[in-house]
Length: 150
Image 1 (tube, rainbow, N blue to C red):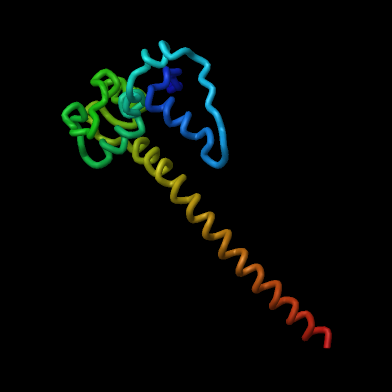
Image 2 (image 1 turned 30 degrees about the vertical axis):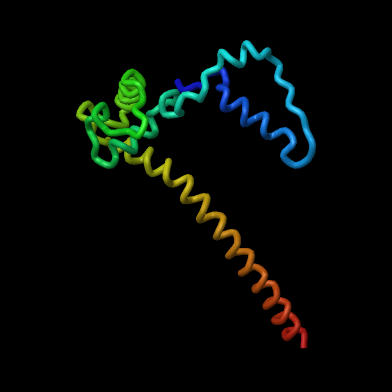
């Protein structure tokens, strides 16, 4: 089961948050930890691909035909343990088979994943079109009803 981990912020994240104070008007940033604690923070955060559940990303990698994800050239390679956990999860969910091939269920999951983004975009545009059509119909109906009353 996927869950979010609580992690300590980095020095870079702390500086970014401090930069938000006073962005639109004078402001102050109060840090609720001493300088000695700040000095122990990592300089930069761990890349997200190294701390995230990779199941969705790997499903897309399998969909493009890559079967050996351990040799796939990620920009920032995630830990091998995370890759193996994601592959195990996809096999357990029957989204891929033992050979790394997408199953019918895996294909449907991909369609849903891409479909949500695509369908929300289509729905937005349809609402705009229907609004215009509805306005035209109302204006037209008003004219038609006026003519029928004569």
